[in-house]
Length: 341
Image 1 (tube, one colour):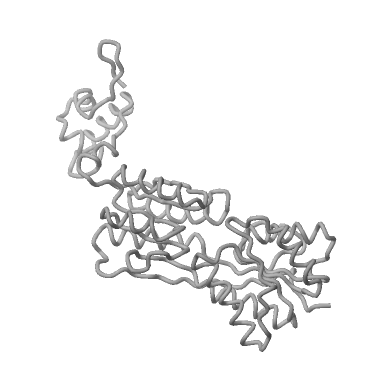
Image 2 (cartoon, rainbow, N blue to C red):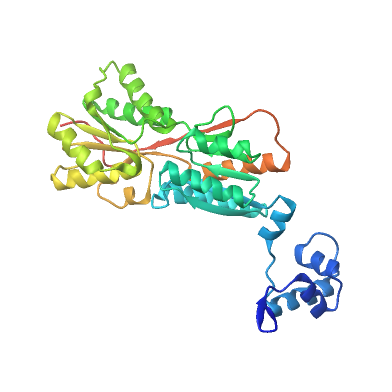
């Protein structure tokens, strides 16, 4: 910072140019890398910028030009490791391309989601990657000319690109594994059925039962709520109603934690007394004994693929109708599953 009459002001590129003994346009080329600047000049300009504490005002420039190298990322729950890994995949890919990520957490609340959208619009971001709670967020962004990629869930199919993991396939594989071991009374915990993830996982569970000639019993399906809700209480109620349940499939990692806690509280031995499968493979699942069998999603790659799709739209490499990219999960068998006693 420099000061005039005791009032702090931001160091400008003109200040840097004067200190380095070059023109402002030469200083700009040296600092941005856009255009030629001799190596000794670039060294002198960078040293002057560091000495003066010059910081490029990317946001101010983007507001003036109505463009920027910022990409908004609006996700549902930073406390959930899934979303943290997703954001990491996005940031790595955007950063490698010279873009900055502006991260907003809506905590699974639709009002906060729309507030986050309005914040990103005020920043004039050209694109936003979002784990949508409803179709409204994507619609508002696209109406303002912002490129949108929905990730993990799809709500605005006709308007936005999307990158999704095949939840139905993953749930089918997890349920088939339990059926193959001989389980027939399989409890299923799901969070939301308003989202494509929850719907897909329930569909996969039902299709695996049908293929295995096992009757679907809706009373074995427990709705928990966003973020895992009170999965321990839901597990307790399920087992109280149906003590003949021999396995539980938790449709996300937070619900799996709640199931595990309730099974430990009841002193049920996993897998001797009851088997457990989780959707989402998280580190804690290999740190408990026995380790938890899980449907593993390529979460970092999910985020990276969404960022790649966004960059292709922003650079004009990809044009035309919205595109949906599907990634496949995999099933990892560990010690939490075995044949029923």
